[in-house]
Image (cartoon, rainbow, N blue to C red):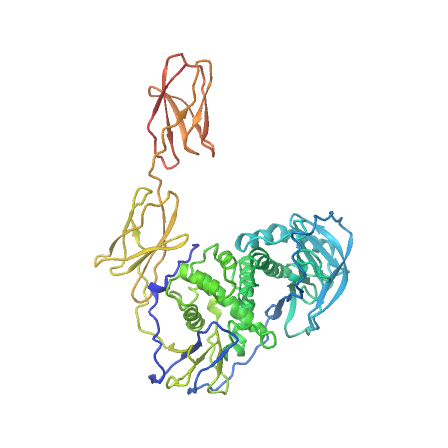
Length: 602
C-alpha cells in the first residue's frame, strides 16, 4: 500500500448534497456542474445558470515537453487478416549492421511509406534500428540498454507481458523523424507511436512488435541528440503494446478506450520518472478547454487533444491515490473483462466501496482538482507536484453550456439549479466547509497471530475502523466511547500484511497502521530417515526453512536448515553408538518450536 492509505470512500465521505432541480443556493460559490454520464459522445444541457466570470486565463509559454503527443494507429484489417502468432515461424537472427525496410506512417496525411533502417543494437529484450544518421551508435546503444534494464522490467511488472508474434523475444525500436506536420516552435508534435497493424498478416505490416521513436524535434535539433528524452516515449508506447496484447490478442476483446489506455501510459511515465509529470500538470493549468468543460471520456483528435492527455493523466493518478497506490492496480484494470469505464468501476468497488458509482467518482475527481485537499476524497493527499494544480473556473460567454459525459465546469456563482438540466447533470457546492478536518490518530493494534480470529485495538472514540487486505476491504467496525474496538476477521496466514486505519464522521482518515500476522503455529515434528551407527549424516524432512536440531539428552549434536522442499541434512562430528536414543526438533523463523521426536540409532 506504499506510504499512502487506501481510502474507503463509502466510509470516509461527507458528501456534498446533490439537491433537486429548482433549489435556490445561498449567495456565494463556487459550484461544480458535472455530467456523470459514462457516455462521452452524448451531450446534456446544464440549464441556464447565472455566472460571474470577468476575465479569461492568459496562456503562458509552456515547456516543449508539454506539447508531446503520441498515436495508436487504427487497425486497417479486412476480415481475412489474422494475428501472426499462430502462423509465423521463428525468424533467423539478424546481425548488427544489417539494413531493413520498414513501413511507417505520415501522421499528418495518414499515408504509409517505406524507410530503410540499420540495426545498431541487439539486447536481451530489444533491437534498435536507426534511419540514416538520426542517432549515433553510442546513443542507439544507450537507448537499447535503458529499455532492456529499466523500461521493459518496469512495464512488465506494472502492466503485463507483450506479445511476440514473430517469436524472436524482442521489441523493435525504430528511430526516425516522424512526419506529423508539427511546427518546430509551437503546437503538438508526435514523440512516438504504436501501430497494432504490425501484429497482423497485413500487406503494409512490419510483422513484429515495434515502438516508433521520433528523433526530431523530440530528441533536440542539434546533431548530438539527447536520448534520455525518448525514455518517457518508450515506456509510454510499450504500455500501449502490452495493453493491446492483453485485451485484443489474449482476451479476444476490443481495444481499451483511448482515454483509459492513454492514462495508463502516462502512469507508466510517472513510474519511470518517480514523480508527478510537470508537463501534463502545466498544460492542465493553462488549458482553457478544460476550464470550459472538456470531457474526460471523449478523446478529441480534432480539438485540444493535449488537454485530453492532462485529464487522463490526472484521473488515473487520482484513482491510484484514492485506491491506496496498490502495485497491481494498473495490471488489474488491463486484465479486467471490460475495456472501458467499467474496468475502472470494478477497481473502485474493490478498493473504495461497492456503492461508489463511476459517475460520482468522476465528480469527486473534479472536486479534487479544485479543492486539492490533503486528506480524503477531494484531493491528491498532499503529494508534491499535484499541489501546483490551479483552480479552473468556467470562462466561456455561454450561460447554458452543453457537457459531454465526463465533462464538468466550475462556476463562481449559480443562483439556482435549472429545471431544464440533463438527467446526468449534477450541481454541488465547492464553498469552504466548516466540518472537522482533523484526522483520527493511527490505531494502536494488539498483537495478532495466525491463531487469532479477532483484531483489537484503540483509536479515536466513535471512529470507523477499516481493515484492508490485498484483495480489498476485509471488514469494518466502530470504536466505542472509550476508543476501543474489537472486530472478527477470521484466521489469517502468517506473514500476511493488513492495513488498518481510522476514519471519523468528518471524512478524515488517519495514518495507516500496517499489521503483520505473526507466526504462532509451531512446526510439526521432523521426520527422520532410518539412521545407522556407521553414518555421519542425519537426514529427513521438516517445515521448509525451519532449523532442525538433533540432541543426545540435552547436548546438541548438530543443526541444519530445511530447504524449500523441507529436506534437511545434519552433519555429525562423530559416529553414534548402536542402540542410542536421540531426539530431534524443528524451530521456525518466528521462534516456534515443534515437539521432539525420539529415534534409535541402528
